[in-house]
Length: 488
Image 1 (cartoon, rainbow, N blue to C red):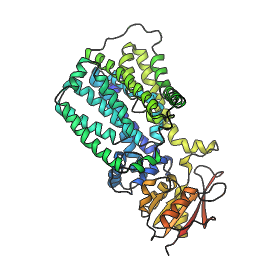
Image 2: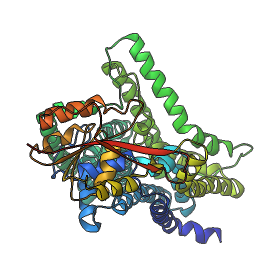
Image 3: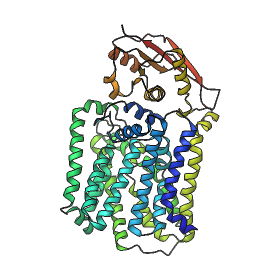
Image 4: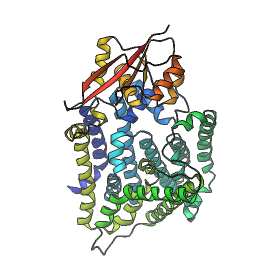
């Protein structure tokens, strides 16, 4: 029974994320922050710069929307396909190294012991999901090159590196870490100093060169919304704050992974031996992790960065579950193997149940989440009143993206997405909308957007408002204030 299940691990992984799509669709029609952002960015033509983020995720999202329409399904299916790909590539990498379905399953399931991979990525991430998939693809190709040194693998590696750099800029850390670590071992050095590697460098350099050119051409836009790596002046204080942030977030990122994978070792003595290739790659993965960490510490010291977001660590620590699998799995007897397989499986099943119920749970605790926001009902009220307009200026991307999904014919601009500012047409009837807060007044950035884009001053008192109960509760309402501006 266990052997049959282990052989079916790839199928079970694919089924898990497919069912995750259906569960998300059933839980709430409301978009999360990053989902809403992609709906808004999909209005723009294909371009190399979308604010502070690289373009690949938005390119892929536009392609999926062209296939399935602008819908919540299009948003969810892309992300879950990428998540499934990350887990499947992990499985394939370990399987290729060890020829063991057991080790491959352990390696893939170890990813489920990292909350950012199994919880945050399903809840609301986009670019971080894609860059982690590209990292997994890169690692798989590195292993394939180590074993075969085929020209096709080198060429595909160039594409994978280019895709990673078009996904998120922190991809530079794992790719440089893998390259530098390869210099420490004879067999991996031979893979680098090989004429076939020219194809890798050529393909990656061509795409990255184009990317850098367009970044420099739009550097003002790129710099407008960089928040993952809070940069300040270089000082002892800033360096210490940056390193402290890195250590604390790293601890939170890895504690469950280390706790389970090391905890089940208690009392074990015997172990199997890995073959030479697996042993060499394990050492290579370990050295790569050391280099990546050192690179990040140097980055803090050079830039004066003081903060790091846990999602930023996803591609940096991707190698850790693979290394721990190769390092620890040979020590697990059958009982320990079952434990290290069942715990992450149990976590994944709990998340599968809890995540779709999040709006219901949030409402019950009196703290509605973003998925409780009743944008569909609010938009329908606007439509019934006749106040839906061909152009909408929204205070933030949550409002803008959700309204765009319900009113696909409108051009929607969000005050917190500078990439869209140039899309404003002052000759169109415009709906200006924001969430009602304490004063009821529009936020300053929306005042500024209306003033600059429409050349009019937004009134202090809103024209009207729409209100609806939050999903799964009648105790909490959401109110959107708005003004309608007609061209003169």
